[in-house]
Every structure is written in C-alpha cells, then in structure tokens.
Amino acid sequence: MTPQLTGVRRRAAELVGESGVVDGPLEGYHHETYVLTMPGKTRIVKLREPRERILWFDRRCFRSEEALLRALDGRISRIPVIHEVEGMALQVFIEGRTLKSRTWDDRWVPDAVHGQIVDLFRELAQVTPNTLKVERSCEVEDRAEDGDCDDFLDRLIVFVEKQVYEKNSPDFGRLFTDLGLHPDAFVQLRKNVSGLTRRDFSLLHADLHRENFVLDPLNQLWSIDWELAMLGDPLYDLATHLYLMSYPADQERRMAEDWARAVRGVRPRSARGWADDLDRILAFKRAQSVFTDVIRLSLSLRDGSNIHEARLPAAVRKLQTIMTAAAEPLGLAEIPSGYRIAEALVRWVNTAAPAVHEGAVASGA
Image (cartoon, rainbow, N blue to C red; front, side, top):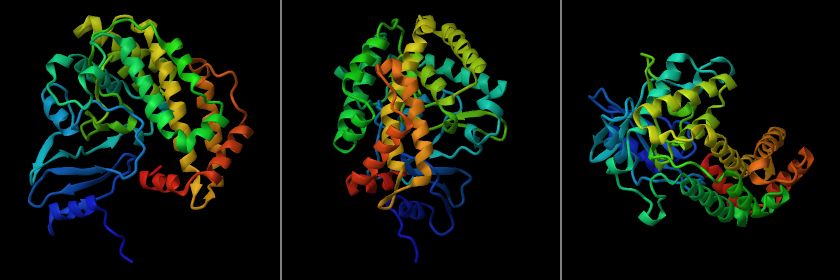
C-alpha cells in the first residue's frame, strides 16, 4: 500500500515537478522538512511546515524566520540564504554535516570550530534591538526593557510556568505531583536566580546546539534553525549554548571566557557581570528542562496501548539526573527514588487520555 502523502510532501512534489528531486522527511521534532532539488537549477532548498499537534516549549520572538534571515544577511556570517520559489521564501539547504554527527571524544570540539562559534557570538552582540527591523510576535508591553536582565529572565520563567507547567497540567498534572513538582517551585526558582546585572540587549539565536551547527566541505561553520531567536540578555545565549553542548569542563570554561572577551570587544556593556550571573542563568536552564523532559520522556514511553518497557529504565535515569541537577534552583526537598519515578511514569502511561498519546505520535516525540 502506498503511504498517504502529507500536505507539505504533496506541495514539495508540486514545486519540483517531474524533473526535480524531493528528499525527506529529514529528522526533526518541530517540523516536517524536505530538501528540494529544483529542475534546471543548482540551488537546493528546504520546504518545511510545523508538525500538527506539536508541543512547543520555547518562547518565540519573531513572526517569520525567513524574514529574520533576510534582515541578517550581511550582518551574521554563514546563515541560510533565502531563495524565492513560486512566491515562497525558502531556505537554501546547507551542504555538510552537523556537529552532532561528528565523532569527537568527550563532547569536545576542535579549536577551529570553537573559534567560529566565538565569532558568531561576536556578530550577534552587534545586532541591537534598535537596528533590527523585523516584525515581532510579542506585543511591546510584553518585552523587557533593554538592559533589564532580571525582567527578561522572569518573563522566561513565566512562560515555563504558564505555557509548559499550567497549560499541560490537565494531562500531566498528576505526574508532576507524583514527582514532587508543585507550583511553589516557581516561587523558589525566582528567588534563586534573581539579582542579575544590567546588560545591553542584543540578538540571541537561543538554540545553539550540535544539531544547529553545520560544517560544510570547507570546514566553515554555519548556524541554522533561527526560529527561536529573540532579543534579550546576551549572556542567556551563552548559558543556553553551554547547557545544550555539554562541553568538557575545561572547554566550557574556555568558551565562557572567550565569549566574554569577544562581546566586551564590541559592546562592553553587554558583558557586564557575566562571571557572577552565568551560574544563575544555567540554574534556570536546568530547572526549565525538568518540566519539558518530564513531558517528553513520558510521551516517549507510549507503545500503542501499552508502555514501552525497554525505554523505561533510561527514562527513569534521565529524570532522576535532571531533577537532581535542578533540585537547588527549584527548592526541591527531596529527589524521588528510581522506583518512585518508574511507578509514576507507568501510572501516567496507563491512565493518560488516548488523545494525548495520539498527539505525541504526531509530534514525533
């Protein structure tokens, strides 16, 4: 039986016609993505659309990733070029391999890659809110005042509290409770991460991890997937990068110091207080991941109408690890045992509404 084509796959076939080539879908959580080789053209472009019923855990700032990339042309090096195809703005596909696909030991990256990441941070620091004219998705009153890093971080905490914890509580509230994750954790989190130094805001990619870096055949580093970009505290971009990359300790320290030198060299006020504040923002990242990973891991355990038993031990270990790492910023009195976590996950899988699981399948969780 021929598999049913999705809307975006059908549109891809229409765009390339009989003499073009469609590859995909590519791996990815948020989007269904195809690579199109256009007939008679050398450029290869990506066509993608958000997956249906996807769970979004990140705040968005710009209405259009493609519009942002157009505005950054000439200001940020090695980002996807936008190509018009039948009135549609599509990103040119970057040929190469992601950093995740590389086999370097112990999460280390070579000096040449390290230096290019630092160069990207330097360029980002020079893109200021008043010089970036791109339509934003948040209202003016929902934006932190330039330099108010405390307010910027608090708005991210509010997003996790309202859009991740409370919005998903009808489906996951019992699981949160069984794991000892209560609403007062957000009160504790605010107490533990407040008091940041004022820093001049700049553009943030906000999702610089190994799958969003591509090394081309000339070993030039490209940054992709700018949909989570925002304007705010530049130290948040560094903290997010360090958290997601899981560098070995010596390279993490070096990256932080090189970031500070690079940013200070172009905008000194954007690097103020970085050494004192970095640990607080990293604490927020650890706390944030608890709520998103509880949802994602619980969804990954569903196997039809049963629990995927082979995945359970790894899910239990991961949840216990991330809750231990976030215990201090969240003010958790105790970390549940492995048995208690497993019991909570199994109970959730056995009692959750079928629609929740259907959504998980659609999201690729």
